[in-house]
Amino acid sequence: MKLTFQLADPAGNLTLLVRTPVPREQYQDLAGRLLAIRELKAQQVGFLVPPQGPGCIRLEMMGGEFCGNALRSAGLFYAADQGIRRARKFPVEISGCDEPLTVQVNPLTSQVTAEMPIPREIVKHPLFGEPARVVRLPGIVHAVSQKREEVGEEEVRETLKELAAAFDSPAAGVMFWQSRAGTMRPAVYVRDTDSLYFEGSCASGSTAVAACHALGAGRDGVHKLDLRQPGGTIQTTAAVRSGRLESINIGGTVTLGPVYEVEF
Image 1 (cartoon, rainbow, N blue to C red):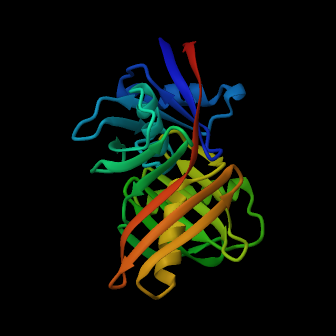
Image 2 (cartoon, one colour):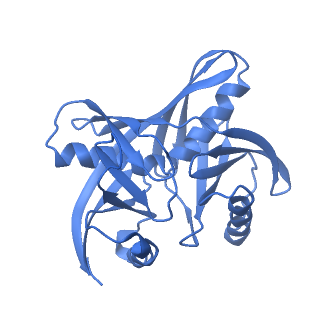
């Protein structure tokens, strides 16, 4: 099989967008093969497919998970594919989420902002021997930890495996957030591919942190938070009304890299 795919870089979270139609049952195997190409240094794989509803484009992630950075990447891909050169908004469908989400793309500045789903729940949960908050989003669950000490890769892997199983989620992440410094170190585990990556950035994880930050402020209004991550900064905006999250948007730079062809 010959695959055509494009590299996208949303704040260092290198993503492969597969343009070749691929049967769903082959996603896991092909994603594993693509991630094994060391020269690409990719952290995740998404498959571009026809939309199922009112979206302009649809992206199916390698494990059926939700991914905010891949959502933004798909939006920029669509704009480039359609020859759009001015700032535009359009609906994008992505796995893990039942409804299309609005993505705003400015091709001239490479700025891409996306609407994020509202968390289904936020609960307290022990993590690495310390209290943490777990934010359950459609298609992924994230723990927000303010632990300062480094945690080993194997401990993170086993913890996220257990977290994904406990919440019956296709993927689980932990966001090591240092609120005073404004920094975040994301790690994400995907069940179907049994893959763990300490990612350059994580948009759904940024959504989880933004939700905790906004609700923790204890007041209604618009709460903005910039999260500096290893691969770049993601800007978040969360609106709270009557003590409840009304909307969350995340944004930042996304760039499209070369188009590749590989034959397996």
